[in-house]
Image (cartoon, rainbow, N blue to C red; front, side, top):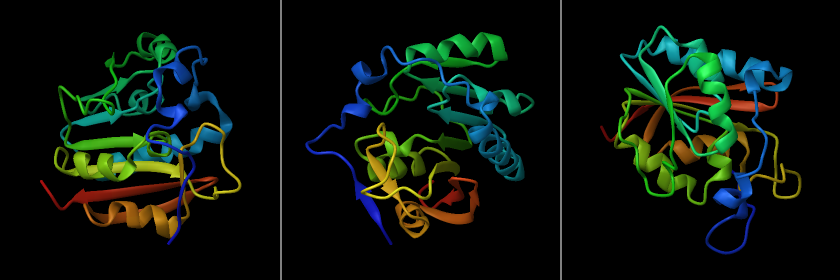
Length: 191
């Protein structure tokens, strides 16, 4: 099992508002290297047959647009993400849910796609989510290491390390690789 902490100090610069404040919108659903991951994530969410879904770090709403028939909403603090919400016809709110652990409305399933590698405390986030949602569907890069990783990432995991991140708080139901990414679906041990 391998996990890499890619920053010094208490707060990685990639977890600050200043880092994201002027970054462009990332329309992942329209990007070939992200589209397959989002389509597979939507299928995993549907397999759980949820009554509701909250996307914590929903970006511009690509995933939420794929599951519009399920009551769902999202939160994201990246200012440019809001440009996609109305265009995609999804419900989302500009909010830093990770900094203050402030989620006004949870869903039966919590989605964390391409989020945990950016936060200061992924272990704390996974535990927090497990107390508030029955299921999780999460993704992260699977081939990054301490020496080779995205410059906007604070953490990296191999596949065994990523499963170990969830195992204390979630029963891992599925763990699959999709191109450069890995996706986990799990049931909370804490709700």
